[in-house]
Amino acid sequence: MPHKSTSPLRWGIASTGGIAEQMTRTIHAMPGAEVVAVGSRSQKTADRFASKFNVPRAHPSHTDLCNDPNVDIIYVASPHSEHHDMTVIALNAGKHVVCEKAFALNTGEATEMIDAARRNNRFLMEAMWTWFIPAVVDIRRRIIAGEIGKIVSIDADFCLNISDPNGRHRQADLAGGAMLDLGIYPLTFPCFVLGEHPDEVKAIGRLTDGGVDATVAGVATFPSGAISTFQTSLDAVSGHGARIVGTMGRIDVDPPFWFTSSFTVHSHGANPRHITMPNEGLAHEAAHAMERIRNGHIQSNVVTWDATLQTMQLLDAVRKQVGVVYPSER
Ligand SMILES: NC(=O)c1ccc[n+]([C@@H]2O[C@H](COP(=O)([O-])OP(=O)(O)OC[C@H]3O[C@@H](n4cnc5c(N)ncnc54)[C@H](OP(=O)(O)O)[C@@H]3O)[C@@H](O)[C@H]2O)c1
Image (cartoon, rainbow, N blue to C red):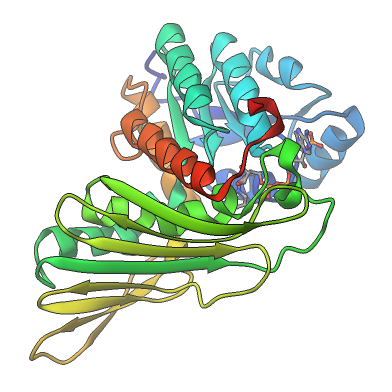
């Protein structure tokens, strides 16, 4: 359903955690958009968030947020375990949805979410913001243009020290673990910049006592012949860079690679070129979602539903190999 191009798109923020705050600040600063409501599991938390960010309406449940007639699009910013139900409720209420990564617990849930978007004729996109960051888009363009030759290898890491035993990252029932939260970036960065999906992924990992992945290292092979390696962990802080090696040179991506502003191109026989690009963080994906909705589309042409399903299949394969099964999957 196209949105009237003259009126601002009205966002409802579903949940009140860290990234919900960041997205609310981002949308407030964007033209053609406003945050009109927030939903939380409690009225008190919704009220606190609404007053902090000057949001007109605060709802004490997700259903109330989704039934708010003033909301056009819902941003789902809850733990991974909640993405499926919150997204389907929003779509069934006639709202467009941008849902945080990892999109769902597994491919089965992701398929149901996409079916709900199709059935309700509403826009749905996984919030994989990296794929809209200008420097990352430019790296992809250079790779596809053959600037550093045929790609041989890509490696990237995203390890953080997240020790709180009660936080969502270490809770199996909230679909915690390093892969869905952090590892998804080094796993899928090569897919985006190469413009292809791996034909095989292999991973090893160590689990926490609570049964989620604490540390994972893996390798993927691509139809073009490229090989990628990825590392992720909840136990230590890594360098957060990425390196792309081709037959005619390499690109060193400055950290943090998943929302980098700069990179260096080393072409054989030429001086290294350090390139810096503008970076407005979450605003790029939000602007893309709004542009697609205004033009009557129900999916992104960047983070397509196929791309999201392929990401979920990769995450499922990695989790199977390292032995992570979430309680709701047993
Ligand atoms: N794009 C990025 O850069 C980025 C960065 C960080 C995280 N993320 C993604 O964003 C999502 C949220 O991450 P976050 O770091 O913002 O999480 P967080 O700070 O832990 O906040 C999650 C929020 O979800 C709500 N919630 C709903 N059901 C819940 C439940 N059963 N248990 C706990 N909280 C529940 C809570 O809000 P209420 O109390 O109001 O219900 C909570 O504040 C995840 O999918 C994560 O992977 C993306």
